[in-house]
Amino acid sequence: MDEINVFFQQLVSQITPLEIIIKGMVIGIVASAPMGPVGVLCVQRTLNKGRAYGLVTGVGAALSDILYALLTGYGLSFLYVILDNQTALFWMQIIGASIMFIFGLHTYRTNPMKNTRNVSRNKSSLLQNGVTGFFITLSNPTIILLFLGLFTPFKFMLPEQPFFMQCIGYLSIFGGALLWWFFITYVVNKLRERFDVRGIRIINRVIGAAVMLGALIGMILIYTGVWSLH
Image (tube, rainbow, N blue to C red; front, side):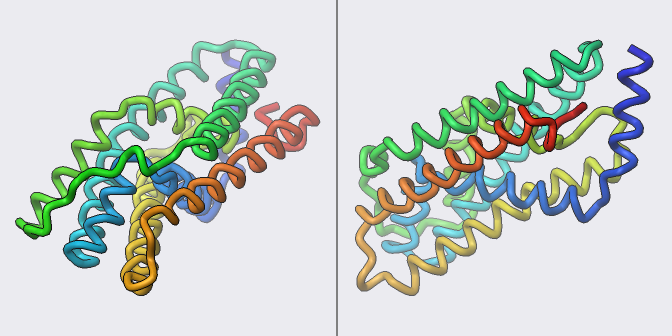
C-alpha cells in the first residue's frame, strides 16, 4: 500500500495545471455533447424561445454534471487507495475505456428524436429554464458511468492530488460543458431558419463515432503501456 501511495505521489508531481485544465475541458465537452433529453430540450428552447433560454438550460445541466463528477472523482480516489497492485489499476483503465466505447456506440445508435417534447413558447424566467435543465440531468445517474469511463483512462483526479488542483480540474469540467452549450446554442441560433431538429441525429452519430474511436485508441495505448498508470 505504501508503494502505491508513493507511486501516485510521483505520478501526480508530473501533472501540470495546464494538463488538468485540458483534460477537464475535454471531459466536460464529451459529457455534455451527446444529444440526450436535456440536449434536445436546449435546442428546442433555442429555436422556440431564443438563445438565452437554451443556454441557461445547458448551464443547469452543467451544474448537475459537476455533482456527478465530484461523486465519481472521490469514489475513484477511494478505489485507487484500496487497490494495492498495478494489475488492478491497469484493468480499471481498460474497463473505463470499454465504458467509453459502449457509451459512444449507444450515442451513435440512439435516435434523439425520441427525446423530443412539446416546448411551450411561454418564455417563463431564465431561472426556471435553468432549473429544469438541472433536474432533467440530475434524474439520470447513469452519467456516473460516463465519468468513470472518462476519468480512468485520462488519469484524472488521482489520489494525492492537491486540493487546488482538484478545484482546477472540476472547474475545467464545468468550463468545458459551458463551452459546448455556448457553441451548440450559437450554431442553432445562427441556423434557425434552416435548422431541422432531425439534424441532431447527425450530431449524435458524429459524436458517437468520435468517442468510439477515442476509446479504441485509448485501449491500444493502455494495453501497450504508452498511456497507463504503470
